[in-house]
Amino acid sequence: MVGEHQLSAPGASLLPDTGDPGFGIYLHWPFCAAKCPYCDFNSHVRHRPVDQERFTAAFLREMEHMRSLSGPRVVTSIFMGGGTPSLMDPQTVAALLDGVSRFWHVPDGIEITMEANPSSVEAERFRGYRAAGVNRVSLGVQALNDRDLKFLGRLHDVADALKAIRLAREIFPRMSFDLIYARPNQTVAEWDAELKEAVSYAVDHLSLYQLTIEEGTPFYGLHKAGKLIVPDGEHSAVLYEATQEITERYGMPAYEVSNHARPGAESRHNLTYWRYGDYAGIGPGAHGRLTRGSSKLATATERHPETWHGNR
Image 1 (cartoon, rainbow, N blue to C red):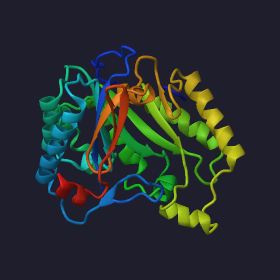
Image 2: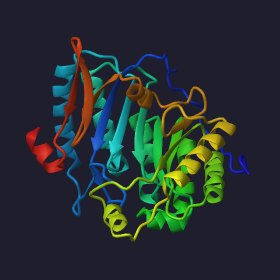
Image 3: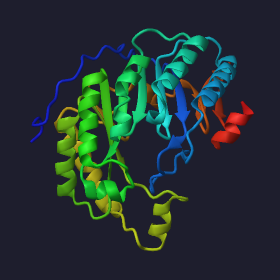
Image 4: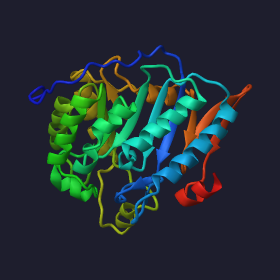
């Protein structure tokens, strides 16, 4: 039953959305503990500890370059994506946020989001991230049953996910989590039940993505060989329609293709993308979009982390 698992959450203190496209900062931390078989993002596994101090220095040098392109701007949101940003030490996060404040004006109360995995090791760092300035966390839950979490290559189980959700709700003013649907053999009834459960855990935002088979991923090879069958277009459409109906019914309608929120709780950073606002993309493989006179400048950085680092 929706509402059965409702938990207390800290009051939201973020600045309200004014409707302006805004100016965002995107920071890409490219490292992961493991590569998920469906993922085609710029993420890399390293079997030795990452030298976070050296990478922080490279981020700061790239910020300085992006500041020379953007000019003085007022930041309306910061988003740390990946990869897995929650593999960063809290002091690394603090140093990156301090760097943003050094090169642009960052008002108090803007949305500062970090993507995080719900493993117990990473959840233990949540209070440190909050102290560093993060006020919104986006958890990569992806499924609410252990069978599908294993299929998706996730390193956490449902118990880890629920513990991380509870902890995030205690610590951060805003919290969202992701789910992937249209998984193999997933029925509408199963997704209906799982999504209603997700709504009961969510505070005010959910990101709901259909599983897509991307070239270059392990899932692509399995799918091409006929060993991985995903729902066809018609069944996927029914699952999509069920997603819209359930989230609308429980007060979290879609505000863009895959993101759902209670009115007023939409991600400020997502809205900047959606409204074609400017944002500086910083880090290995990051993309940006900056207004230069009457034109838009699209930026893209080197994808390979160590090569990117050496070029800074």
